Image (cartoon, rainbow, N blue to C red; front, side, top):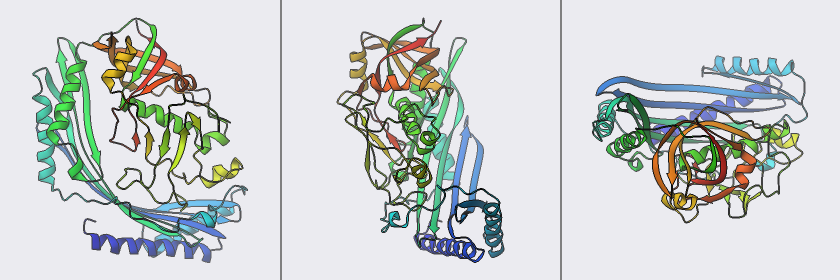
Length: 447
């Protein structure tokens, strides 16, 4: 799927397949239907300690259809793209719909909300890399990590990955839209040893465009340096102190926020931010927005999973919750309108402050810098938050020593209110962009 002419031909074929799915659904009596078809292809090469460990070529295809008989709904999927496969899949969906109970909130998103124009967001940049070249890059990455220091004496491997995809969606409103996309990454994880203790850490780079990736050597060096910094880690006594979530970890806090304002959590009343629309949930300096139309963005899309046009919007403005994240079903459940977020949020930006990580540590004075978290200790209903963590102890604004085997605990609602500053050290490798977060106080459980 690397040639653009071939990609255009495949896109036309998938659009026809979607049309066939919708036509078959109508023929079998469905009052409305929607369908999606996807093709994916990729290469992944992993080496460990200089030897090739795995080479994977992937090529997947799938189609899914949802049919509605009034308010009754049925869905089915397959990887069989034959005419018989399409017919059988629609039949299976129709059989399910005929035996389900109707739900007043079922149905396609409203016709007037469909995306009218689908701009090219520049998401497709295939990487013309051979298996041998991928292996060479992975070896260069791991070698750079192992050469950082003699204490870096083992490796969990380095991986070079390239992936291309094509997705097409359509529904019986007459909407059909699709686009190709690419994603490439290089990653490395190594192990260091000092005395009887060992530590591991990693680094990676991910982009739509391969030329924008960090070099394999830089990724390896960063993985090695991060591992080295963690050697000699110790536990600390239980205390209540300020905590900085390094940018990579702060991304997880943003995702918890997004999960709490997702429609499904709200209509099930399983969110600690229930009925908080229009309320001040962060300090006034906090601004968080979504930009689904960002060119080359890792989560960009001109329409959501229901064909609804996406648009940039403020999620948090001056600390106030401005919107929920809704698809059409959850919107109807809540008596609201879809926000174009069927399938989730796309490209989230937390406006950075003017301080780098070093300045945040100076402001904190004494406390904990969190660089890794383990486990999933969040109660979405109450906001109670407890995670295993590792990082660095800070005194007088300077890192003193690495820390491990601790637990950090608090309540997300209180943590959001106690956000003191957002750093300008932005994490840019994913679809959520934020700097480090300084939280006024949390419980750190240690010895």
